[in-house]
Length: 124
Image (tube, rainbow, N blue to C red; front, side, top):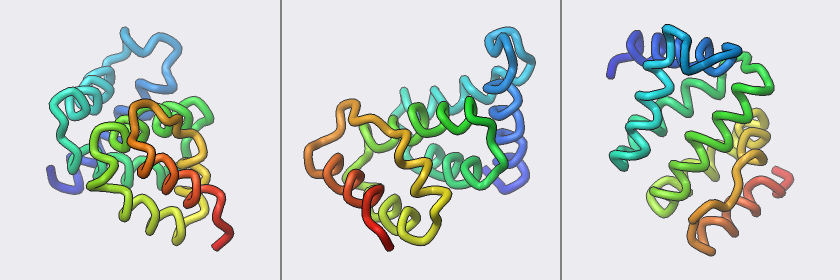
């Protein structure tokens, strides 16, 4: 996926997430795509989406959906592969660190969950 396609996906995902009836929104395809990456265990496109989306000016609803949806799913399914990237971004960017606070444990390993909590609470 190139940068233009990624930005279009993020735009549509935000619009569908913020819509009153997301399932009827013409942008629903973007939510389905993000869910499909999770179902198909495709960590890299999911990570690219998260990194592009969190930088936007998100509503509370979209921010919560990104944290408790895509980011939480990535860490539950691919935590050992992505935890170092997550820690680094949480250390460098307070906005991402804040997003990390909306992640619940889900089915993460003890080790990944402990590192998430440490990254979130650590004062850099």
